[in-house]
Image 1: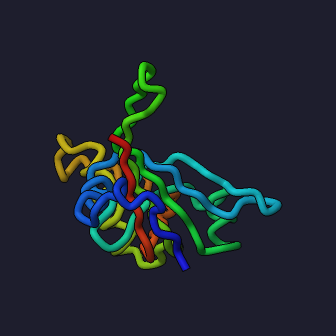
Image 2: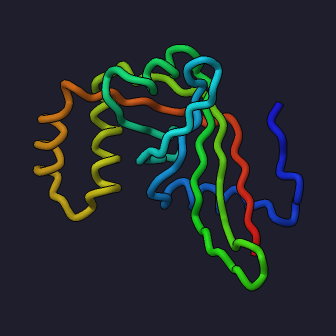
Length: 156
């Protein structure tokens, strides 16, 4: 059902795809938007080895899109170096395909929010992170994407 990388010599192996998903800072989440148009949106995220977690408001375009269609794509660019003299770009990127859903269980929401907080604010104490989570938790929604297929590609 999913296409493989056409240029096999440029394909990243599974461990490199995993590293990029774990270490990446921002990705683009692609959802089925309004009127059949794709809805790509830059997102902070955390990957726990099984799911990619995102946080957002409880209402809005992302929530509407997820409720309409649970299929999603997510792209993380690890390296992006334009080489003008070669008319090329040195890059590494990963695209994950899967099913996305709203997290309903409070414990999983808190865990995902904690993981997101530790990723983006690693110097903060657990006490400060828990205080921040508590302050914003009532207005927070958490989505998770179960990965069904991953491809990675590079250009040296």
